[in-house]
Amino acid sequence: MKRTFNILIFMLLLSGGIGSKGWAQQLPQFSQYMFNGLHINPGYAGYKGEHYIQSTYRSQWVDFPGAPTTFTVTADFSANEGLMGFGASFMSDQMGPAKTNAGMLTYAYRIQTGENSFLGFGASGGVVEYAIDGSMFNPNDMDDADIPQGVVNLFTPNLNMGLFFHTPGFFAGFSAYNLVGKNNLENEAVALAYHDVHYYLTAGGLLPLSDNVQFKPSFLIRHSNNGPSSVDLNGMFLFLDRLWAGASYRTNFKLDQSFFPASLSSRNAVALILELFATENLRVGYAYDLQTNVLSGLRNNSHEISLGYYIAPRKVNMKNPRWF
Image (tube, rainbow, N blue to C red):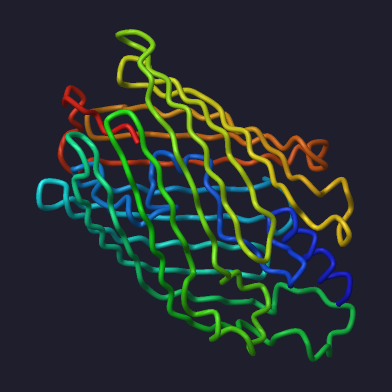
């Protein structure tokens, strides 16, 4: 039993989830978050001004036993000439015996703050299910009372809120996730639940380099009280309004090194990202994450695939293309 939980703690640390106040897995991360802001900010809903559906599948640390896998579907709808947005999302995340399912509904409203600038306010609410499958444990003592019998699950409400500001060449956002529902988990046995408040801060811009090439630098900072903070630094090039190609560097910081080995104090990774508008309606994306820390020698890298579909044809020639 002790060996089993040592392995789980090690995995949770690598996924960005242990702090000095306790240990809990953090919310799933996405290397292609910059192409679907609903993953990190409900204020993004309706921003594109078109109806948009996206699905993402992420397999982290391929071939690592019990490694995380995440599947999401989001729908993003615009109304009132882009001043209102509606969204719906479903997420299923599994790591070893722990599984999380979440369903959320989102509403956003944006006001015009300048000739071409807007500030959006968004909120999403829904339900999260946390579960542990006791049959996936392999304890030394088969009669261990701490091992759940079968699947143990519980439900808790959830609330996320965010602000999203944008102009034709710049965007910035701040959001907070898991604002309610934690009290439902305090006395439960599902110890792997990651229902802690998470904060996201992001910003970026679009810089034209030529008639056919544009550059999009951006960053994302993520923080939670019971885990390390992380920062993503991204650089993407857009060619002929069709193909995105670029990379992202991710690192943790301010992890309590008194509790963990120094070799794990900073979980670094580089993501190579490609996004292609295959048709006027369909976007296909792929990201390959290479670990650059203690896991690099294990060759357990990560894959992320995304598909996006515009219900109305994408306006490639619109005056202010929504590339954020």
